Image (cartoon, rainbow, N blue to C red; front, side):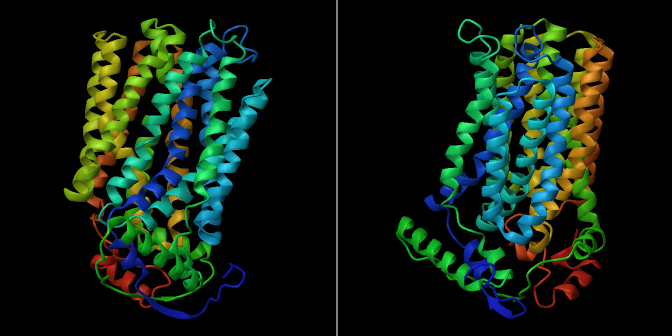
Amino acid sequence: MTTAQAETGRTVTTNIPARLDRLPWSRWHWTIVIGLGTVWILDGLEVTVVGNIASRLSEPGSGLPISSGQITGIAAALYVAGACVGALFWGRLTDRWGRKRLFMITLAVYLAATALTAVSFSPWWFFVFRFLTGFGIGGEYAAINSAIDELIPAYYRGRVDLIINGSFWLGAVGGSLLSIFALNTNIFPADVGWRLTFALGAVLALVILLVRRHVPESPRWLLIHGREREAEEIVASIEETVEAQKGEALAVPEGEITIHQRRSVSFAEIARTLFADYRKRSVLGFSLFIGQAFLYNAITFGFGAILTKFFDVPSGNTGYYFAVIAVGNFCGPLLLGKLFDTVGRRVMISGTYLLSGLLLFGTAWLFDRGSLNAVTMTACWCAVLFFASAGASSAYLTVSEVFPMETRAMSIAFFYALGTAAGGISGPLLFADLTNTGKVADTVLAFEIGAALMCAAGLVAAVLAVRAERRSLEDIARPLTAVGAKARVAAGAKGSRPAAA
């Protein structure tokens, strides 16, 4: 049944969500992780490469008349601005057209824009296609996080989501090492090496695009949009595959939900859901995104400049240091991810934000005293970002699971866009201005701002974080199309479990 043929306005009772949530982990789930999650590696590659090549691009002979400040400031801010606009634009379409169609389109946009960045011949061209690259990535955040949460069983959802979002740092490791190789003028001319890094990103995106064709549409989305026959076929196929891979019969699913199918949800309903029915969760989402966005976008785009300006690290060697902190970043979600499903969301989200903020305050103090060198500074960042990375990944997990199914992609896009616009656009611009002065006190101030925002978000999470661990998405936030949903949400505003903040 195609989208055009989908029947809406009918009421159906189904156990499809329960069937997906009771599945044991299998090779099929790994195909979902690989097909959807690997785009974060590309994002990490993109951001890190730009940060590491900034000093080289600004040197004579690079083929692009651009300054380091323009790269770490203007280009970085435009990339993030593109991601914010793309998240809102594609997020709305993801809820209307489906997860699969959009995660194919957005990756194609990213691929084309990255390839065109590689042939930049002037600053304006570089800026335009950095914006469009971000535009594609922003759509990926909404489409991919929606699809992952709706396909991964509730028992594993937290750790899988964190590790997938944390895989950004595998790309950062690759970007750091790639920049070392590409910026070596003994291997490539100064005006060629940096172009190859962007070209490689486009090639990797093409490979992922081919793999992603085999990822199915979300059965939960199909069900709500009047395509329950297609949803049933997909779930039955998944069950058959998992049974064959595990060699045993699946457990009997428990629980049904009754859905009144509809084609779309209006902006007014989305606004009411976010700002009336789930306003405490909205405050939580904003707080988490603003804190991590400022910290990460400022550090990611500015770390190379700090190393070269304050510690005299050659521009061609900054990739080694960034590779080290990138490994620390990935280890955070990898090693702490399971605790978000066992110890719980509230303790782990608040704990990782507060610990990273306090450690960053300590780093700022040591830097101000002149007690750090390039190696110890990198070690301090590793400690900060081990916890910050898990916390930042949990921000995406939080906004993707605590709002109703019909608004999921738009909710992710909304909080990502506004939180990142506040911290991710202002962060690189402010951080570039502060570090470019060459004054230790200015850079210390940037550190302290990031630390304060992380600590503030941690305190908000300690009060408002939702205990979503191992719970079905439909239990955490009742779908708007579920029969009796409005009554449940109203009751939740008075403290009942399904809509409690």
